[in-house]
Image 1 (cartoon, rainbow, N blue to C red):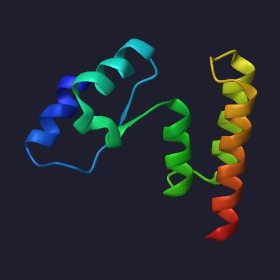
Image 2 (image 1 turned 120 degrees about the horizontal axis):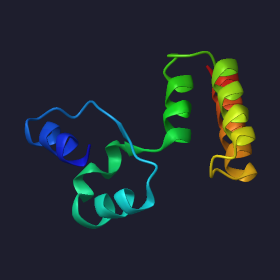
Image 3 (image 1 turned 180 degrees about the horizontal axis):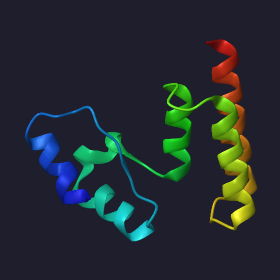
Image 4 (image 1 turned 90 degrees about the vertical axis):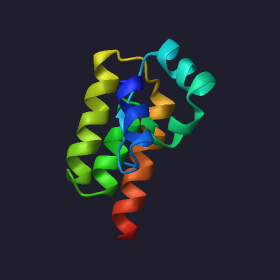
Length: 94
């Protein structure tokens, strides 16, 4: 994923995101591929992106976030709550 994303940038394609949840992989990007930082997101971030860009409705995205929290995924309740609030605020402001 990192190599492919870096290739996209080198070819002038700036309109992409890639999802990395693995801490070691994210640390590699932060250390050696800082040019990719604006394109990197995690699972929670991609759900926020989907809500903000109307790929899915805010309600579907919020439901996904609560499902992730219930699954035991390593996103704590504060992260989920902040993300839900962000989606709610953006949907009310649009």
